[in-house]
Amino acid sequence: MRLCAILLAAILVSACTALMVGGAGVVGYQLGKDERPAAVVASDSAITTRIKAKHAADSIVSVFDVSVRTYEGAVTLTGTVGSIAAREQAALLARETNGVETVDNRIIVEDNSQ
Image 1 (tube, rainbow, N blue to C red):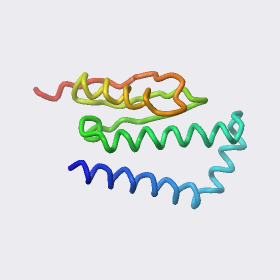
Image 2 (cartoon, helix red, strand yellow):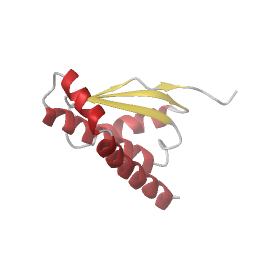
Image 3 (cartoon, rainbow, N blue to C red):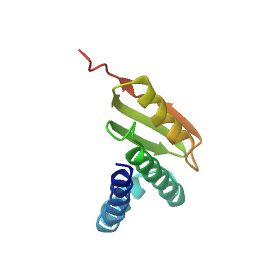
Image 4 (cartoon, rainbow, N blue to C red):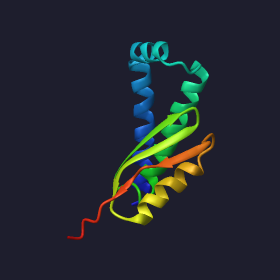
């Protein structure tokens, strides 16, 4: 199971690389609209990718749909999870990621036991 999660994370990271290469025109457009320096945009993108890979490899968080956005090192987590433990684990993994300054955990816990 853990091997599957690691392989999934590797696939996600490699897919991001292909997307960045294939979507260079879109990225260039976005950089033109973004007031952050290109190095900061690249750093934020790398932080987001590392957090998503950690979430995909984690047995608690990987089963939920958690979105990650990074802006100048400030990470915002959104989505829904099935437990407080999953919510806290997602935030912990983000906080422990190199380059993260702050984490705004907006993840909603939904009780699906009904």
